Image (cartoon, rainbow, N blue to C red; front, side, top):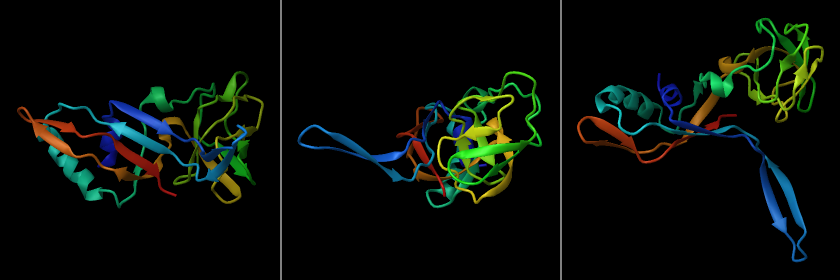
Length: 199
């Protein structure tokens, strides 16, 4: 275990999945924006200051082994961040198809008699090892189309759905803070860890 430790022990997680845009303002005051593409997940994660260095020492060694050059699969297991919000009791066996754009079509599973299949903000992963998407608008129990936060990166086809805290991201650490041992057997950090989705 290495960078997963950072997410499991985080005191804060800042999540950015917005589009990269360029904004210009003309002399007459007209504002224009253009998408630059590259809509990826970025996580800024802070660890607590003050834990015992003797407990973190092997964890730090494992993280330094990965450094800023190796990708790793991570989960955000805190249910209040990634928990499923819909009303379907059995999420296993769900499949969906994708053709193009930022929508998928549910083809099996996720059946219910009332409520919602998904609510805005739910997380979906297309197949094991696929990209992670957030649901952009509520999906009723009798609807099949799911609008996602960004264009689907996978090839057209059929995929099993992984939902909620079970989704995982392949990330690369692009900013690794320095640590300081202080007091008696305590560790602190010079800043946050920053991870970006590896695509």
